[in-house]
Amino acid sequence: MDKERIQRQAKQILDNFADALACVEKESKEDSGIIRDEFERKEGNCNQEDNEFRTAFLKNSSSHDDDFIIAEKGSWKL
Amino acid sequence: MILEKVKLIKSGKLTAEQNIHNFISKIRAENPKINAVLHLNENAVSDAVFVDKKIRNNQAGRLAGIGIIVKSNINVKNVICNCASKTLENYRGTYDATVIEKLKKEDAIIIGMANMDEFACGGSGETSAFGITRNPNAMDRIPGGSSSGSAASVAAKFCDFALGSDTGGSIRNPASHCGVVGFKPSYGSVSRYGLIDLSMSLDQIGPLANSVKDCELIYNIIKGKDERDAISRDMVSENKNLKKILIGILKINANKEIWAAVKDKIKQICEKNNWKKEDVELEHINLGIQTYYPINYVEFFSGTRKFDGRKYGLKIEDSCGEEVLRRILGGSEIAKAEFAGKYYRRALKAKKIIEKEFEQAFEKYDVLIMPTVPKLPHEIGTKISVEDMYNYDVCTVLANIAEIPAISVPIQKVYNIPVGMQIMAKKGNDNFLLEAAKEFE
Image 1 (cartoon, chains in turn brown, green):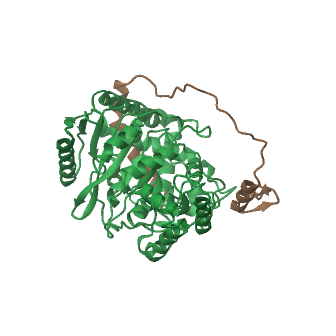
Image 2 (cartoon, rainbow over the protein chains, first blue to last red):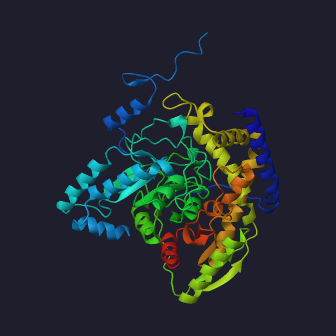
Image 3 (cartoon, helix red, strand yellow):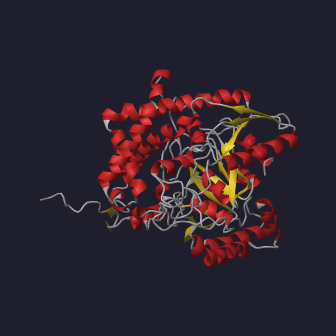
């Protein structure tokens, strides 16, 4: 795939969209955001062990050693 | 139809095992042509046998033995859930999404996982890394997307109902093209815990089925506040009188045969129920696409940073298709500090304006109606520009931007291709919308 072409195309699309939306800058001065009634949520029991999850999660990894996923192979070292 | 089948299963005239076995046989025979299903659940038949046992002990739930196909971006424990992407090709769900937990609790059976546009980036079903899904009701045409396999599975009778996700029309668009019912609930009314997100401020999970009544049944089971999805909450529909309905027909550019079919249907229903109708124009709805895509691009870019190939799968930029890469690269542009105001903040402002316009319209109108998709699905293999592809979403993105519930109901065929009509209601009035939509079937 031609990454540079796709990037140029995406930028062009976004520029066209941004131009079309320029009118809203004048119409709306307020910034967008979400105000929630509640800011806290109840957490579950984090001490509970889920061995099935552990097994499935490790199975999805490309490489693991016992309970540890090997995410890097030291390739950054010269 | 689901309720009738549950009665049949609970009475013993049809066993859950037979029901699931029938679906699996049909999928094995017909899916090679349609390509709607990516993976079968290896445990589907044994799960059904277990449900039959529960039925004999009078312990079975409201969906005893009913078969579901699930879009491949919703986690189902131990089943491959790869978002139709090479990035997650062999990824197995490590837990059940909340919607799956709720459906399993009612003894529904997961038959398998549906094909889709890769990471839900697409509106045609053509961007899947595992091949295009065909439209069972117009085999040379696209089924629509991104829940292409879910809609095609319902249309092909591979399941009793399917689950999809809808960010800018991904449930309603394929439902319209395939001739089935697709419902996108209000933003936040159904938990998204376990959904592999496309755009977190717009995503919603919902059902695709053969009737509005079936969608209502499923929605009532999966809806509700979930501690694991901070945006979810319980929404109570207003009690509206179905005898006095005022329909607003939203003006938008669409194919004239599709508009004729929609207006014809509205006329019939108004005459039958003594409902009233008026044409409505909203000033900014033609900015839907321009508002939707910048938000989608940047949130998708942000959400995909976890696919770096370290803990599971492959690095997304090295393994994805062109549309996914376009959104990631575009999103990374938006995420640059100098562009945040020009693209993302501007789009969020436009979102607020459109949201307010809909809120004001619903002060007067009970429901707003327009076509679901502005044009007929193109023939598979047709070359189409990115902009033309995005324009398929022009009618559907509005409900996501305004966070309101919307449903696509099949109305008739145009040139032998199914066409759907989109009905929308005020945020939180999901159950009222479903009641009203039954009149249009």
